[in-house]
Image (cartoon, rainbow, N blue to C red; front, side, top):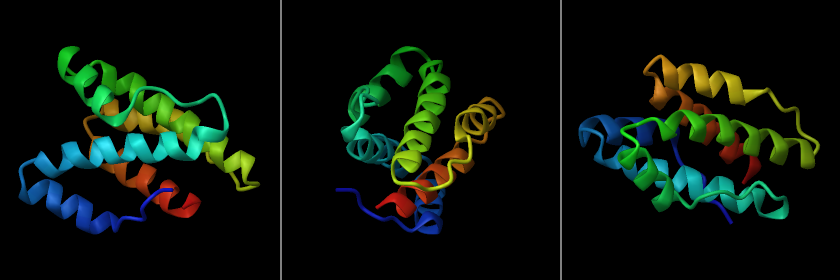
Amino acid sequence: MTTQRNIATCIILSLVTCGIYGLYWFVCLTDDANAIAASSDDVTASGGMSLLLVIVTCGLYQYYWAYKMGEKLDNAKSERGMNSNGGSILYLILTFCGLSIVAWALMQNDLNQLA
């Protein structure tokens, strides 16, 4: 289903590779969230398509993506009887403030809990 990833390793690799690993991590986050949301109608664009949309829209799509990821993860947590923390707005605000990597770390933490 989904792969548990070490958050610290993902952050360090993203920094060391000047963001190249971050692109891979972005794709993996999207694909893993889609796999978890497969039971509901929350499945959206694949990881590769989301990355392409971020590039084509000069980064504007990432705000929509962050919000939708929060919704997907909250819905998946609710379906499994876990406490959902309302991550949509938090992820959106972090992304808007230029702290996307922090939002990704929080998303990965949620995905690790759901895996």
